[in-house]
Image 1 (cartoon, one colour):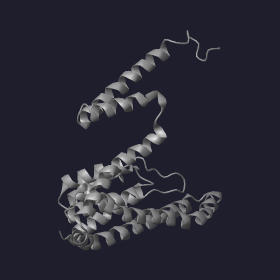
Image 2: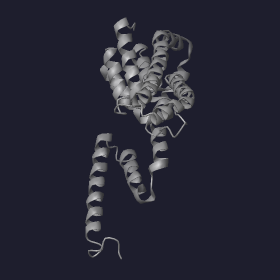
Image 3: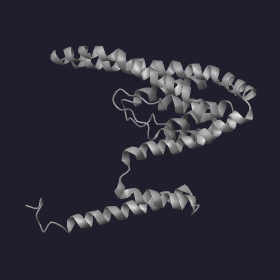
Image 4: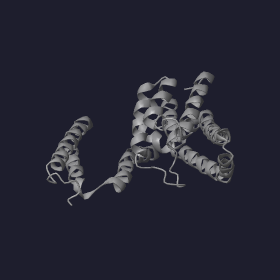
Length: 256
């Protein structure tokens, strides 16, 4: 599938908006579950974009930046996974691992930006001392612009070489490699949830994780049904907690 100049331009615009949104704006537009369908629609395959975006979102759900430690970039990874899946006709699970190198380039770009901008924070301090908010704005806008351009260049390189890479890999790599990539792609969403649970899981609510596993593994229920069970359990627990809170204390707020 050959991309037109208009399609490439639109994808680059979406990339630049998502790059800035990652640290500014709503800080939600950049997520793969949002960007994937948009890129898929631009390329003429909304359904694949939605599937890839949702899959990549699950994969990255537990990968959050902590301080200067940056995970593989979700913006570029989600965009390139969609491009590989649509442009090269790859299976969604196989397209996810192929996008990781581009996501790593995005990670390096963010780290480079942070490194360059760190000594420039003195300009913001000087502008604050001089009561010059415009000076602070200029530094922030400069950082946004640099990040948007870096992301656009990485995605542009992927768009121009993506078709050739996909066709070459399809012809050169044996079927066993694609089977391995597909298996790895299917494991990545589970890895994302595992990373998230490592931070959020508490002993008090571990029973609900066990319940969900039993319903999926042995009950063979679809994910939507599992989600509805989870919502029902959360609502019930909320009402029980509020009732317990309101019925204790005998009118005393702190027990004193």
